[in-house]
Length: 273
Image (cartoon, rainbow, N blue to C red; front, side, top):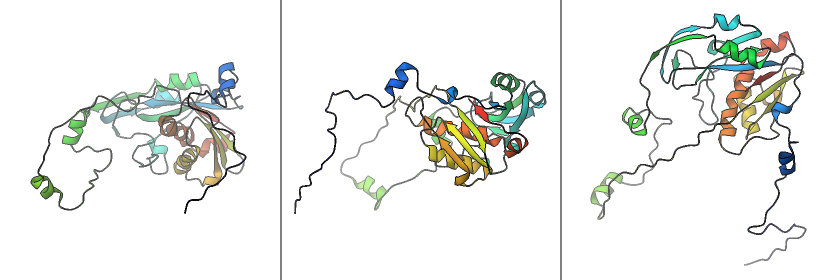
């Protein structure tokens, strides 16, 4: 039986082609919108810079960070050896090391993080690392990955009934291949997180993330914390794509992988970029 429902008190929705102002547009166009970089820094804030691999694929044969640790303004340096929990993270499958150890899988993979008094000091210290590699041949095409059975995720087959027999006895058969030139987005954009220790072993994290709850889960995973110990605030971000959801997670993890020993020694905040 059909039943009509009268909706009252609802505002008329926009018509096709009618422009509706974004709720923060007046702040963006006037320069009044506040981003994380606009937040005032607390006293004793430490700035982080990440040391990235300079090899597309290979084994690490030398990993000397002595000069990094002795550089001006450096307060601490952390590597995979300092990660006390599982050295993996990911929004769906945890298969991405927080810091690579022994083996690197792509150019620009994170190897270590430097905490220094200023961002410039952290950046300069990172460049002092002495790292050597035994290069290996990277996989650069989908076809090569298939031939070597190098999967991002295990293959999944969906089938019903006798598939092979159906193919062989089908009255009409087509075969061939197609290649598409499209690829996932290349996100050339900045990411930042600002972690502020609070009372009773809790944290307030300002993060340019699209998914605050997921960021909260990742931080708790990296520190072994409970959800109530971490709060994440995402006031605004540069876009609205998948990358703001997952890539910024690494910023938060680098920010927090420096460990609670720094927080217990001094009231310190962290700003990785």
